[in-house]
Image (cartoon, rainbow, N blue to C red; front, top):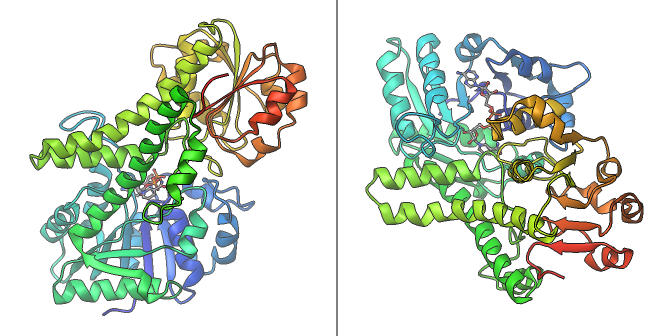
Length: 468
Ligand code: NAI
């Protein structure tokens, strides 16, 4: 197998950036260049003060340790491709917004454009690695495009190497992955390419955690992992509704269930619903794949995981309205947290967006605080969620605050939407002083100490627990 000396990563986003920065950190003998068409993003990766384009604990230290040595960020995609012997394709694959499969299928336009670029400018053999999450058999399309457009002496070997990192813990996940998965054709050339990429990861990942499989299994495993993770959350959230109606407590149920070694304790926390750019997109992708394969029952099964998640969000918003005496018109509602989960600034598909949209429909006034998300991002997300409202009108209803305390002032109710650690340290006595009475706290993340808040005087409503 070739010894990989130069890597280029196309796409400097949440996946390409951290993944290839860690490869550079762990492989001082390999030169890693991360390229992107988005100049602002590349400039931020090159920022002198290390104000990087994405927030991820520990990421700055990794970039600091190797940027300018064997890690480079550039907008020169063509040069990156020409110099590399291994190319990661880590571009976005959002859900299609129009055309065939709209609302379900993955939009593979970015993958295809990147692939065509590789074919157009490469002048030597390349190992091309699909890092983006893609539907099963995308590698086949990539190979067809590459081979049809290749220069005479260029060979392309295609690998699938899906990324399993979770935002918020990306660096830790990359340093100590549960597994690295590499899919290849089972031909001699395919297996050689697979060995070349394995040797990169073997710089720091134990060999027994590097799994090598066929291309299609690798592609499908990524969709399968996300579908099963999301299904666990939808299952516990479905049970949370039963808890609320019966007086059972979802934390106690999850704990009891999780003690079963076949089930295990992780990822069993009820919440206001999952968000993030991946779970919903990847399940819908699986639904579309099932339908295209004429497997309608399978499609229905997986679609229900997403429907349950939508139900959980609207159920929670309705509970807020019901509890506040069936109207929140002109009432001030505080929303704490806007990111889709703690320790990230990412807001894609965040439950907070849906909640705020629903509260706006009820004509409430909203005060909002998040420790990481930029103001411009919040306005963009809220405007997209309510296309019939002008930004000017949205700004009349929503106020962005710079602390929890400020956001809670004069509110009727506080809604916890993201599990940021700093929300555990809120001075609830102070918050209580500043709020209208009765003062309600709606805990969408099982985060507050219900007894303590009740003693202060709050009326606390928690996901998966019966009402007062
Ligand atoms: P992202 O949107 O943050 O980054 C993608 C980047 O690719 C953008 O900066 C875009 O400008 C760039 N790009 C698109 N086309 C290009 C081209 N032709 N040439 C150069 N640059 C180009 O997306 P993110 O979150 O990094 O996701 C990338 C892929 O990884 C997706 O398929 C996603 O499903 C998958 N994934 C995401 C995870 C996450 O936690 N965000 C986790 C695991 C997989």
